[in-house]
Image 1 (cartoon, rainbow, N blue to C red):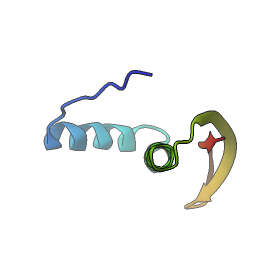
Image 2: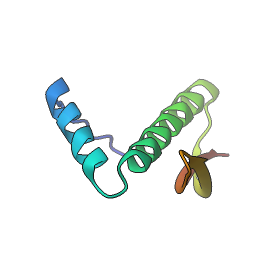
Image 3: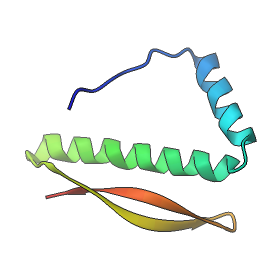
Image 4: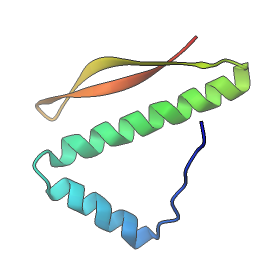
Length: 77
C-alpha cells in the first residue's frame, strides 16, 4: 500500500483541528482520530520490528468525557 504524505504548515494543522473541534462531534472526533492514528503508527512499528503483517481492523467502543465513540483497532497476525 502506497503511503501518501501531506506537507502542512503548523498553522494549517491548527486551523484544521479547530474546524473539526467546532463541528458537531468536536472533541470526540479529534480524540477518535488521534487514537486511531497512534494505533496505526504503533502497528506499523510493530510490523517492521517483528516482520509481521497487518490483518485488518476490529471495531471497539471507547468512553471519554461522558461520550461513547467507535474506534477501528488495528490487528496484526
